[in-house]
Length: 519
Ligand code: KIV
Ligand code: ZN
Image 1: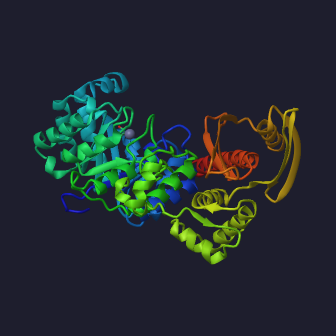
Image 2: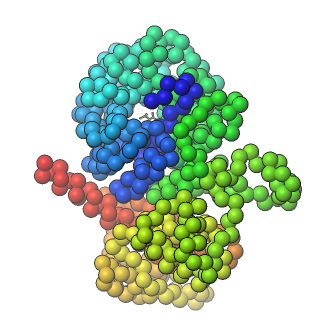
């Protein structure tokens, strides 16, 4: 780790705290792809999961530990020895393994959640850090609900954790309750008061319940913390975590007030956002700072006029700095393979030859139906191509009859492992008819929890992007997303994408159960 006193370590917890948010579950393959990307982007520590939580989590952390080249790979654990041992087992093949172990320290958590006296909690802090340190050199200890913890007790716990071997001390605002001044003051207080504070790096971890997560994060840095825990797009429990891209760009853009630096390659931020959004099927809010589609759009005449005269009038960052290219209108049906490959490179995609060929075929098909192809169209197409490459079920054909005189009907053909299956169905509207046809071909118990449509670009020929969320009878939640100029085709593809995900998750769960059963 760096000895530079203004270097801020970026600890990404998209795959752990981010994945904890309902519906954000990712498949094993998606987790690996995200971990690879975070590593390439310069994230210092990747929290890959919570190994004791499920066999699937364990397998993902273990696989990520084996493949990550540069970053530290962390596994989360509670204070119990079996948790810590499981985390140690999962990260043991990492080039740089870390165990992140936590326990609640606030009166309300100790009394109601842990049902333990403070002295018993203090002893657990010592035991958990000692146990973790016996496994690895790099141990992070977190005081859950630190911002509602009594200061004297917090200081005693931190001192004990460092003495027992913790090298990073994380003080989370678990419930998103703190204000920036309070959060900064807490770090100043502990760094001043804890006698061995100089032996550890202090870390911030903020939730966004009051919309203050990023403000609190930078305040914590001003108070002396040098590690930031965050997630791509700010996904996470409840209102989410502090957004990685916002923190990194706040530091970079306002370096006059936040005199820090990170190792993040900022031109990859936009791509990271898209990747996480595609994997979780959580759309990014249009006006989201840094990576929202409107973040660099200038609509009003006055703003456009100012921008034409000098872009500094309304732009505090160059879009290129975060990987947003200026020219959005790009290609049409006469664009060739080389131009397509160059465009993908510019958008941050490195595809294998067969993936490139598939994407090119789909691009040509789209260009036949749509006059102007924008960057967003290409991104939607490639993300979908990557996400569905291994899918067993594909939508082949859909014919829908809609209009004022119901019932509406759909004739659907699916390709399942190379076999074609066709059914006709009716429904209360064309979407219902389409989904009923899917039900007929693939009978299932999963319930539709969410159905959302939005346009990828502008214009009546814009592609529709549909998100579908399904919940199965065992409580698994999956999202599927697809884009197509025809909203109903996009709907069928999104539903099938979700069903494919469900099948993969079930197969993954069965595989790890079989492995552990056999062990
Ligand atoms: O928010 C929180 O307190 C956490 C801890 C487990 C670090 O996520
Ligand atoms: Zn958290």
